[in-house]
Image 1 (tube, rainbow, N blue to C red):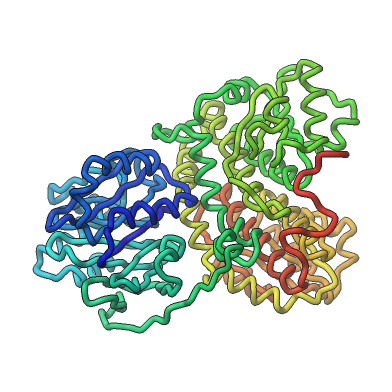
Image 2: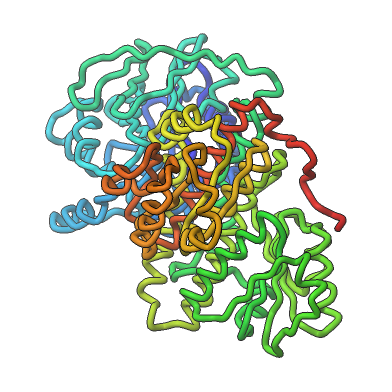
Length: 619
């Protein structure tokens, strides 16, 4: 989720880097920095916190750096190491300075090898280690581009890296493998690098989206693109982005909903930053606030919500009971408020509402407070009624959501639920502490994984488009799942109804034989959520039951699950090898994109579906 900007050419580079990073602030970050050559001297300025901190560091020397014409900049979201100045990018190793977006999976092996030779990084990051690999190649007599190619071949994982070298100060080299990277020729003379098109559009609308395994070289001779494996030069066509002002506001996407689906990795980052104390290294360190204390005293949680927020609450029940061993009730606010419910003396009632204005949820919170029951809120809107009515509130940080159908606000609510579960689990369930700590380390890497999975031309999005083209005429859809996939199935059916106006139902897969299976025929699509989790084998048994009755199966499962794939008529692969608690975060965007693509094929108004409002403020 890190942001990258680079430039070599005729323009003053410091202003260009700062302006480009400003356009990447939407990505979410906790530290930032720039590196550039002023004459032959390499200058590095970086800081934890916001971009303004780096601007202050540069102000005193602004006139002295006016001659700088090559440089790189970065906004960092911490995955390896705390969000400190020391861990901020760019990283400097010998003659090499670099910025990095992504994860180096074999960083521990590289670090151990360096330690055996008495070499120790100054930061806690995986990124700095790449600089050592490049420096080794330089010391072996190789030129900078060749050193970058060889070093990149020694790392595993999805990453993009842009670097410069003291030995060749007029050259910037970028390598892409997984994490997005774009380049463009500056009409005034020069080459631009960025992690997406936004920083480039001020200078040109003709951009090249690098492919995996591309090496981009910018210097005074212009732009060259090489194959990583062979070093041979290749040709990549530029794409002209003729975006209208409205399309620019949508980030280049045709609809706000699609933009907001792709903003979910950033929404996760910002919500993590808001709810956690990121300066601490222990697992799930909640930032001090009144709500944390109230949550810790609960002997039972009652989660109340409506619509999509109710599905987030259902996921919260699975996570909190599993990780923290704390009893959880989940209630529809519209039913709970009229039921004369019995709430235990040590219970805490937590209302979840994206807008903070949902009428039924607010009514429950008011009633509980009148009874003397402790109340909490989770909302995305500061100053909302829920924030004022509940005793304490947790804010998600999804940012403004324009599309009526909830996407990034939902995933942020889910994250809040998981953070509650993890933080309570650390304190209440010491027997599972090792699992909770391992889960947390995977969680901070989740935004990177999700960003890569959502890549526009990636296997996941392409599989969804292919499937939608084949199932758009179906008379109806059943979404089925077990465990944490069950609330995601409910959300998938809701999204399809909301924006595509197609009949859809979500079911716990084990409930099909209790009535719904009578509806199955060859005109029905059954969307089966069966990732590699504790419920997979049981879900596949339910899949075979509906398949034998003529249903067409759209399977969603681990990319390497060939036995599941063989049972499906249509297949959507999702990333594998993660704690099963994180699987809803990759399954949910699949459900959102499936509904979005079908809605586009149906020609509906995706951002403003009929009969719906963004916030239900009346009964």
